[in-house]
Image (cartoon, rainbow, N blue to C red):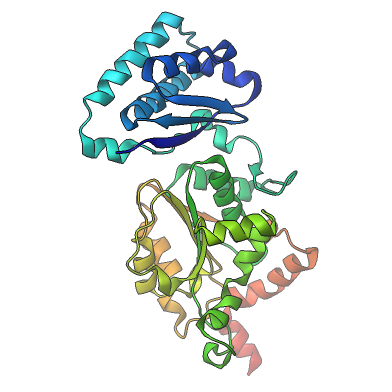
Length: 343
């Protein structure tokens, strides 16, 4: 393998001293012992160099983080011994294992998730507005696959996009993929004007709206041109494997069981998948075929899968939206009663 680069998120200010050492002494020792380029900037450490040396440096920072969290104050000699041991271990590592490990993002001291979500718009931070929203973000933090259901306006899509953008900015992932099924909510897709791109664009517009809140137009355009951010219809996901990415499926209540299985199996190495939807707004001909409901039932006890739900108390749009959702809620829960009253 040629030279590689790695970014590691670390605490800022005085919190980083137990891990990086006074005047970043530990980083200097890693640089001298392993021959890597290493520098701390803002809330991250950048490492580049020969793959085995970069992997040894990555593991050294991980061990130093563990020591600082447990209250150990390693001496200069102990840090040097640790680096020497890890260097020997990575030199003996089989090539296929090294390829799997190298570049694997490491989140130090939970620092990636400390405080508000950091997006690209200067001065803008995204915070959960309710206990349920905080639980939702915690579920994303601790699981590689998250299914979230809730009514309109609860922030289920917005927070998922914010978490993905936050991870992208921190260097924990390399790509964000935003996906929606192109299912008509009463209108017919074929009668819309324009080519295929023009026809599906209205379905993807809500995802673009969320992104525009989190980065300026120039940054978003650059990321999309360079394929760092991708917005696509669900049908375009078939046959792909997505590594080092956050993949978000929005409006998942409108996927069929087969489509959901296809999408779930796109998850690659070092990636997270977030699936959101509102089970009261299923636009499929047969609501019983909803892939979101089926997946929640099948995956409820699968390790690594997190299920969470938001309700009308989590709505963060106009106050009237919450009252609208509540007004429709009784009918959504008891459709037969509503049908009888309409006769």
